[in-house]
Image (tube, rainbow, N blue to C red; front, side, top):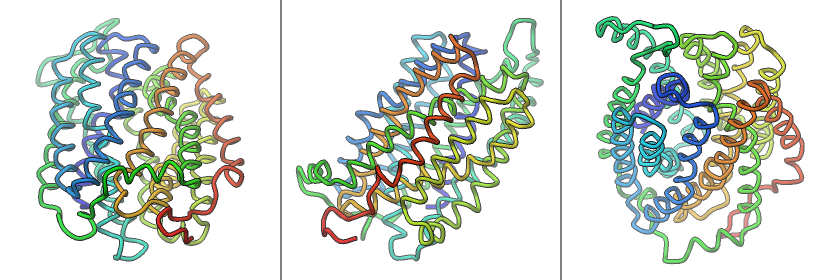
Length: 396
C-alpha cells in the first residue's frame, strides 16, 4: 500500500505543481480560464466520487476499484498531451477527473481498511510514502524537463512560455500512475477491505449529525484554501519566480509534511479530531495571509512549511474523522461524499472565485481573502464540529 501511495502521489507531483503554469503560459489561457479548467476537476468529482465510492462499497472490490481508477487516471494524464486550446483542455481535464477525482479517496479507504488493526501509527506511516513520492518527483521533474528541452532544441523566446517543453509532464505523470495501477492489482482483496454494504445503506449517513456537520465544515474549508493552492504557480511567477522557484517552493511544504503525517496517530491521540482540524485550517489561513501581505519570495517560500500542517490537519484529518463516524461497510462511500462536498463543491467555488479575484483585483487578492476566511473558520470549529460518534453504534 505504501508503494501504491508513492507512485500515485508521485504522478501528482509531476502534474499538480505545474499544470496551472502550463495552462497559463504554454496553452495561453488567462487566469479566469485557468480557474474554469481547474474547476472541471471538482465539478466532475461531484458525480464521480460518490458513485465510485458506492460501487466499491456495494461490491466489496475496493482494491480492484483502486487499480481501475489508477489506470483510468494514467490514461487521462496521457490524453492531455494531445489537447491544445481551451475547449480540448477543458474536455481532457474532465476525462481525467472521471478517475483522478476518486483515486485518492479510494486510496484512503483501502489504507484505512488494511491498517485498522495495525496500531495508531500505521495509517500515517503508510500515507507518508505518498508524500515521499510527491517530493521525489517534484524535485526530479525540473532537471529532467530542462534536459529534455536541450535534447529537443527548445529555447525560450520573447513572449513565449518560460518552459516550452512542459507538456512532457503529462507523460511523466501518466507513467507514474500506471505503475501505481499495476501495484494496486496486488493488494489484498479479502477481509476488512472486502466488506459489503446493502442497497440504500448510504442514506443513513445523511441523517447522522456529526457526519453532515463535517461535510459543511469541509465545504467551507476547501472554499477558503483550494483556489490559492491551484493558482500558486501563477502567483509565484507574478512575483518574479521561475519554474525552478515553483518546484523548490514544494520542498519546505513536503519536508515538514513527512514527519507530521508519520506522527499523525500520536497527534490525534493528544489533541483529538477537532483539534487536528482546527490546527490544519488555521495553518492554511496563516500561510495564505502571509502570501497575500508579502511580495518578497523569501517570505512566501518560508511560510510554505505550514502546508504540511494543513495536509495533516485537514486533508487527512477530515477523512480520519469520517472513518470514525461511518460504519466500516460504508467506508468508501463516506470518503467519496467528503471529497464530493469538500474537494469538489468547495473546490469549484474556490477555483472560480480565486481566478476571478486574481484577474480582476490582483494576484494578492485571493490569498488575503482565503487567509482571513480560513482563520475565522478555524476559530469556529468548537461550534461547528461535535466529537465523533459512529452512526452505526451511537458510541463515541
